[in-house]
Picture 1 (cartoon, rainbow, N blue to C red):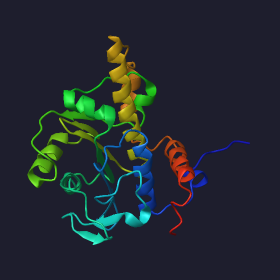
Picture 2: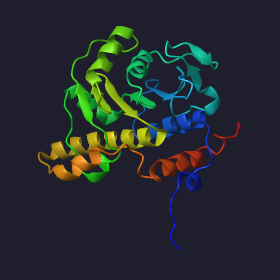
Picture 3: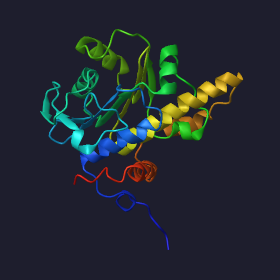
Picture 4: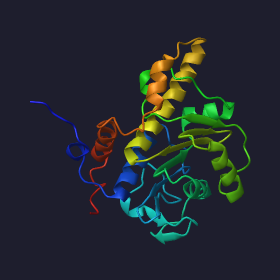
Length: 244
């Protein structure tokens, strides 16, 4: 008997707000934990965006605290304000209709490479999971809570899927929650492992042919990775879905 994994067998049915909440909580444990910093937007079929609110850490976010905003940043649903840096996402979603989920934060190792203005090599296969092209936006033009600076950053990202924002943090773009999670986890692992390899003074990057093939992934092929981490968060907090 062959078991074919499907998302439906690995997680309960989740609402979009529950998916966003679990994404935030799982990424907190992956190093996306710079206090109140960071925002996630999840584009909905009607063109609005679900978003984590300002003043709530990713570690404590609950589905009922998720807000809905329009592309001007106005809160349409919810009792909390939008994050201060939300213009970065607004400018992105206005320009990149292929992006469903956008993640911005200042993770521990990704921010080091952003501060250095360098793209880290890929030294191991796990660091290449999720696919996508990584770029470095090497000019800091100001905080992204200002629309002009946010627009400049988004224009510099271009059609890349992941970005290191100089003197700031990272930006992870994807077509689904699963892909956003996979890419965000792999990016931080890539940055962490490259930092340690360089501390040794030398390393052997992943063979180019394999790295190129992995880069072409849309991040949705690895069924089970996102689901397993989401289940771990539900185990940590069994009350998370209690508001259904």
